[in-house]
Image 1 (cartoon, rainbow, N blue to C red):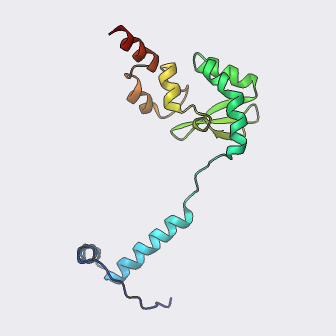
Image 2 (cartoon, rainbow, N blue to C red):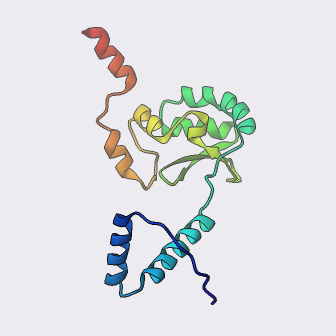
Image 3 (cartoon, one colour):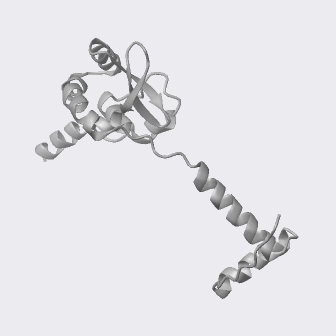
Length: 156
């Protein structure tokens, strides 16, 4: 591999720390810099773009499903209401995604429809059945529901 000379201007503190790391790794500052640049280039090339649905497709779906999402009283009720309209919720990382029912094709994130997972957990006072990120519910379960907070304010 041919190496091309390059001159870098670095702040003294960055140079000192970099030289210290290179010395502790028993490599030259040039090897350290090449490795750091290679890692960053690889990270950026392989970064997955966020999966975002097209807003032109989401707006009509949001209008169609908003009453369904708003009327549901619990996870089971929401699942039934969505299935009647040909949709289902599934775990997607730390949140939820809307999928076509029954074929399972992903449509969008539930949050893109205005219903984040945390908002739905607060409302239903329970995590999504089978969701693996149970710590998310543990973090919010003691928070008062917004409608409860309004009642407390009115009673003062």
